[in-house]
Structures are given as structure tokens and as C-alpha cells.
Length: 251
Ligand SMILES: [Zn+2]
Image (cartoon, rainbow, N blue to C red; front, side):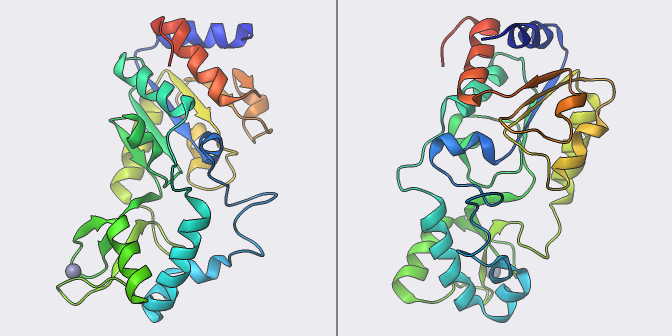
């Protein structure tokens, strides 16, 4: 690993509070394709308008049929967190990371054991009743859609919706407020696997108040050239290296 990673490791150890902001790039090593960009899910294969909240409200059965197809394409059956997810969970348990803010809905940070997790776009692991707010496991909903060819219904008469932020929906306000607070209060902000193209994640690094910024991403982001550390390397190598340098163990 290069000297930037070693310097970032010592900054982490000196910091009172550090926060990670993650995007699709952290999950590609787990086999999850990205939504945007070259070979992204949105485009010829899936039309984003099919997943608009208006479609869900107008045609819940059709929405859920498409949602099941998307899920099967997006989440491999044997999907597991990779070394980068585990490394962030380890940094948190070592007291070196205060929170993980993520744009991802795949649930892999939670599966890796991250405790203080702020999922800006919700989670695909749950469904929530659009009328009464009851939450259930998404696997149950998918099995209903698969076997009965209709949207999963709640006992209150409402329809279950994926607990993700659909197109046309607002982000969960409390989560966003807490994410902004974490960024404003931290000493080190690590952006990992986000191209920083989609708001609000794209604007979060600008809200840090003097914190050291590390951008770990293969491709250039709007913040890469302004970052204190611009590390264009494999996250599944860089983040475990940080753990090794700070905690002395291997993830
Ligand atoms: Zn309900």
C-alpha cells in the first residue's frame, strides 16, 4: 500500500471522529452491478420510470412483477459482504469510525456488522406497508409476488412497498439530518466507492467543516482533486490495509 494510505491511517488514529460515506463501488466486489454508468442497470434493461412511486400507486401488481425481476438481476442468491464492508465494521468496533453513511440499499453493511448505519436510500431488505407503516422482511414479499403474481398486501388493506426510496419519493428526513450532522462534526471523512454524482451524497463532502477528506474510488469524482487523499485503488485492498495499520489485525 502506498504512503497515502499510511498517512490516512495515522489521521484516523488521531481523529476524535471519523465517518465513511459509501456508494455502489463498495458492493461491486460482492457481485452487485451498479445502476448507473457503463453497463449500469438503468437503461435498456430496466426503465427507471417502472420504479417510480406513481407506478407503484397506480399499478402495484405490475410494479412488483418488475421489482422481482430487478431483484433477481441485482442481488445474487449467495451475496455476501466483502473485505471492504468488513473493514469498515472493524474500524467501527475498534472505535475509529463513528458512522457509515451509504447510498446503497443492499444491506451489506448491516450484514458485515456495521452498527451506526445511515441508509440514505433505505434498505431493500425490508418492505413497508404504504398505508400503516408495518414492516416485514423483503424475502416474504418476494415469495408472495413469485407465487401469487400480485403485490403483497397488509392486513390493514394497504400494499407493501420496498423500504427503499423510490423515484419521486423524498429521502428519509431524520437519516439525512443525522448524516449531515455526522459529516459536519467529523475530523476525517472517507468517501469509499461513490462517484459522488447523485444527491444528496454528492453534496455531503462540501458540508464537512475542515475535516480531512479521503476519496477512495477507481474513477475521478468531483472531489478527487480537492481531497487530501485521492486514492484510486481497489477498496477491498485499501480498507483492509487501513485496518491492519490501525488495529493490527487482518479482515
Ligand atoms: Zn398496513
